[in-house]
Length: 169
Image 1 (cartoon, rainbow, N blue to C red):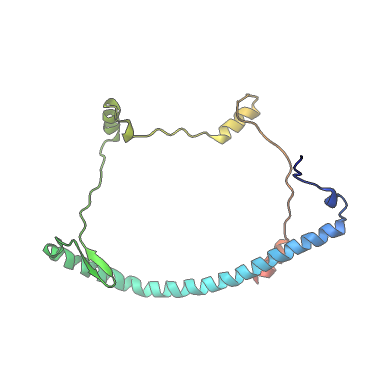
Image 2 (image 1 turned 90 degrees about the vertical axis):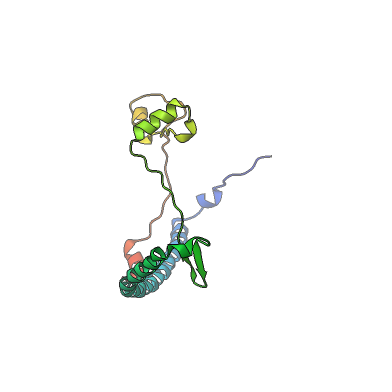
């Protein structure tokens, strides 16, 4: 039994006027989406403005408060031995033991871990450069597993002036 993938008979009999009407329906939906998006953008801009105003005020207060809390924690480190953090209804603050790997000479580290067979300490990445493969194909090289495929794409484009109008601009 055959499985039908595509049957274009309906569209072969479609008139240009019917296609125009179909496209008009598509354009109307897109224009509605753009208009709704523009309304959403305006609302987002209002929220962004309010946030930026709040942030401008808070940015002077916050660093000073953080500096004061940091000074308290450092001046009273014995209070943060066990438990390491003080929990409050708003969250927690305190001390954390931290470590960070610093590599001063990457080539020495690489040589050592490679010589010691510690292959889990590094990775080698090979990246296929598609532009170079395309260039090679265009120059006549036969590269198994790669080919240039050309074709056509159906498209539609709603007029920019209509999109701008839908956005309210």
